[in-house]
Length: 421
Image (cartoon, rainbow, N blue to C red; front, side):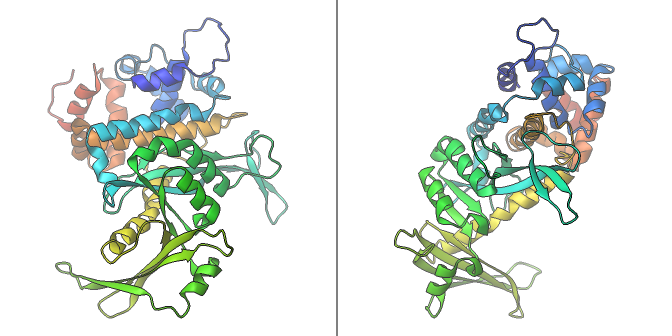
């Protein structure tokens, strides 16, 4: 929390030296606490903080000196750049690595997988701000919306994901056209790539990203890629595959109590990603899964700049398929599992909507870090079962009891017989 307070203290303060009982650190941490505690309402959360022992818990657990009102928080945060919090996402990754938790995300000889994808988090025909994108519907109405490019550390066989700093899809200074997901991906790679290079990242993406400009941006950022590649949208690759005898590798998987499945991997190396003499050469591979009756249950194909061999193709395919985790374990969790991503916590006139999304993602990252690296948090989560039950208990117990620190709080949650502080 000290790092978070430090960043919040450096935010732009609209009061310009006027005396106020609330500091920018208090304001930023108060907004963050809404998402960290998974409160469904900004106003209800602020009232809960101010009730009972809430003020003292804010001091002991969050380091706040005073509790601002929800309107004051929105007013003061609007206009601040969401990118101010980018460094905290890097610190979360560093803290996870220091605790030995990064191993859960490492594959292909110690590399990490970074899945990229875009999603929308706000849409209205009435509410809008200077950073809204817009689209015209068939009935002639105009929708104003916000979307962003998300990035998450993912791994096959790992249930957790670790959100990284987002890149918002919004009109750029001096640009006449609306922003798009590919442009946001290039900006994200340029900004965040250098900080992740030492982890030897592999970028995962859907068919939209399997193009030369994105592949070149990934290489420039010091990363590799495994990108979904549909032959129907890549004519040059489809022409190279036609009539060619592909290398093949088969695996039969037998699990106790289940029927066997057969995975068939095929690949072709050094295929041009597009037409033209300057085309980037990539390695194409596919995975096909057949059930015990020989019926196809799954098929997909990918391109990568990593070597594809009989020894590596199965793991490459598993990593490529892990791209779905940014939709299932990231977007679905954010929208329907307590984080309330699509709820309008505050739109503002400038950057407020994007900044609150950033704090929401940061809270998700903190939760993943705690689950993988903090034993007390893991025990408390296990004691309460489902995630929503844990956070319900967390919000309730802090409204009535005063805790000197997080260790005492988490111990009390994990052991119902523990003596109240």
